[in-house]
Length: 91
Image (cartoon, one colour):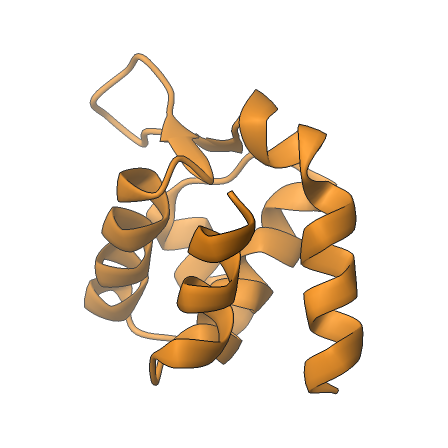
């Protein structure tokens, strides 16, 4: 998970937005529209980042198709400290 977080947050252009998504989902589960509004980012941009976060097991979708909520995975939560350390280093 550490390598995936370094890649997602620092090695690609969208790292800042992915970090903001993780922070937002730390407060509560949200759907893509809510995230787009909360972060003032386009819906398609959110969907792109969500696909990346899902692929790397940071975020998981809920079971419903309509207004699907996204949650941080248990695996991410076990590695939250790594996320926090990365964020401190890049700030």
